[in-house]
Length: 142
Image (cartoon, rainbow, N blue to C red; front, side, top):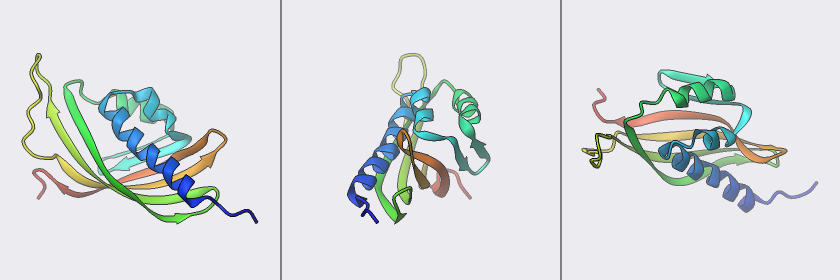
């Protein structure tokens, strides 16, 4: 049995986490979709989508005046083999509203969440098979 290169799997999957944050924040939705397997899923409280068509509809429905910045902590891998890896990443989400040429106002981070990811090796390399977003703290939460 061939040994797996854990460091390389961690590198590639951690890049998927970072790219997701960048691409969502810059509204590069086609690039976001390419990070997922064709049957990939994304869920958070109040939202559960699977497959690229549902994900595309969700991304396109994001309000145009939202400005977000996802700041990702290190990705911690819990399990890994040659075809699948599971990891958790702590993410601080900043959000503001854009208005006619002004810099969006930021009061506090909007939320602190965990990305609970399953990554799968595909013919095109590692992709996100599922992402569950678990809220840890949120602005205005009770």
